[in-house]
Image 1 (cartoon, helix red, strand yellow):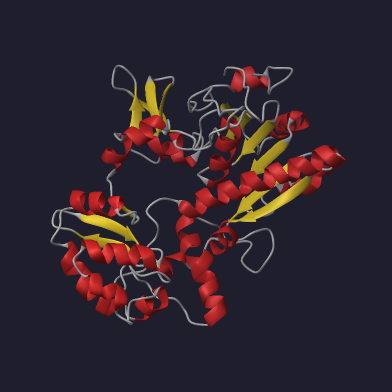
Image 2 (cartoon, one colour):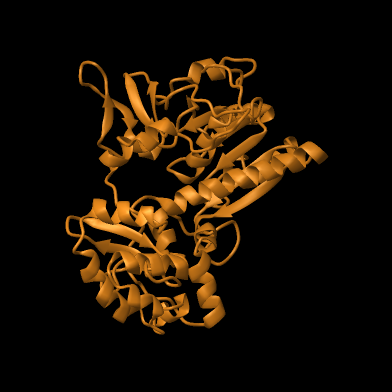
Length: 394
């Protein structure tokens, strides 16, 4: 692992997490320059996501590695150490590593680490400046604290699935593990705030973060719509609960996203589709009116847009300063000049060979993110770390 020059250079992270929420957080901290040691269970072959494939990276001879695409999505810029924390030797080693660390992050069930003497209450006595982040399904307190937590269950329990999908279809999860990812992002924000407090006072603390809590937090406008009106929101597919027209429409050869955010944009849109009169119709002149008459308006807009191909709709509406865009597949996304310009696809050299990964979206003018090491094969750094006097040394 090459030396870091990022904004978190010198910060040391002991990562006892697995799956996605914790690893998302620690990869972000690693991208920002922190040194991350990832502890993996030798009895299970490491992080569960190493088995969540295919696809896997293969070596030059076609042999499958333990680098699944899922694992690689959240585990670059880390050292992998195989360690059994259920053993006295493993527990002693975790405490040695914690003595050097600024941050410990874990996602065991609440109370799960107490039997090993690795819980916050125990470690904070020995290492009072340690920032200790605990991620769980429902949090360290509350009636559901003992229940396990997975992204799908969090999406269901926290309400987002009731809002997602066609109105007449099943409740639908978001296609990626977004509850885990957002939880990981909240964890990184909380950790950085706790580090700020520690630097000012010398005092560490525990951060108690729940998948369900963070999922509830990003109900955003639909959540506050309910709290304000008392009316339970309904699924609307791609339609917006508060803006019309703001959804996906069919074109002659595909689909287009239309996002009309104000009355001026609506007028210019209507001129393009040959229905300028709609902008002066009292049913549609304002967004609240359009919201009330969503169905009758869409009965006009849908056939009108279907008479144009996608490229024409986008070109004409962009020229009129009306927000519009395509629905792209992932091959189109990663082949785009925008992704290339923003370095949102990167290539790194891993043990079996080159791997393609998604880049970090943060762009710093003075302390850019760095990609120092590819996602590691299981236990790749065990001996180096365990034998080192300073285990976090790059």
